[in-house]
Amino acid sequence: MRLDYPFIVGFSMLALGLTACSNSSVQPSLQKPLEEVRSSNTHAQVTQQPVVLQPQTNQKTQSVPSLNSDQKHSTQGTDIRFVAVGDVMPGTDFPFNRLPANNGRPVFAGVRDVLIDADVTFGNFEGTLLDGGQPVKSCQNPSVCFLFRTPTAYADTLKWAGFTVMSLANNHAADFGEAGRTSTMKSLDRVGIKHAGREGDIATLQVKGKNIAVIAFAPNRGNYSINDIPQAKQLVAKLKAKNDLVVVSFHGGAEGANYTHVKRGSELFHGENRGDVIAFSHQVIDSGADLVIGHGPHVPRALELYKGKLIAYSLGNFATYEGINVKGVTGLAPILQVTLNDQGDFKVGRIVSASQQAKHVPELDTQQQAFKLIEQLTKEDFAGGNLSFATNGEITKKN
Image 1: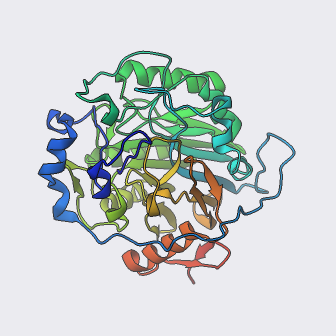
Image 2: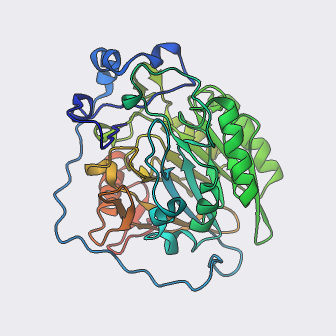
């Protein structure tokens, strides 16, 4: 992913749109200095043309009906309504203090009404909830070492924002080792947010009398592997035998503005196999998954309806306060609303478009850039993905 700290000037890596994301959980070769990563350019074999956005003019904040209660609104009957977003990193105090005011509440203030309007609200927590502590890897230059440490008090903010379950399967969840991820898990437990990530950590929820399991996969050590599809199929099948609905989250695919398109076959990035996301998604659905939510590329990607089940191949960066570059397509922050019937089949959906502004805060976008991009990519990558897109952001099954 392209990362951009305010105090870094003239960092040519960003101009090239390459990732500077450190990965503590994969091969040691991926821990080399950014200068070496930049020169190796191992991802060139899957380079795609970036999607170019037109400059935004007269941007206005879309209004959303105000909700007078902290309680979520739910659909009627036995339908289950999900809200899903991409990467969440509401501020870091490592290696320098870049934390927002009021424990991060302003980060979510402009989109909170959308987040709490669901039965289940999902996000990918990209970092660690930890007070103090040092990372498990050494950095030659702390100013270009991208490790995220958020105070544990921010768990209360995530709860206030509406999240009910979060993925901890990604390349930043163990920035401060497994002890750091344990701290994240305990912090989320304290406020009642479920989590899935580390091997053995599977979230279970009860909604409207339905048992829902959420399992997360990633290419990084310590997580259920996106690259072990046979194991993924077995895990999902076992969960489906015990639960009414199964949601699969994956962290996969190459990163950055050049990688909005879903690639057939395995995606390699800086020498790491980031998964065959199409084969993975299809096969976990064949094994019982009802909804598949992707993140990792830091840009929105296409949707696909496969055998009546919805796949979101990437929901991009959602709330990444001063930690990740959010120029162009990397700044689009789609909010996916999905309603499943009691059999787990896709019923209706909607993309609420948001984008991150000057201080990396998601705000509703009346230009609907995220929706338009996802519609375009879905048509280009999956011939429409068996979906119909309405101008108001609504998504339905194609007749």
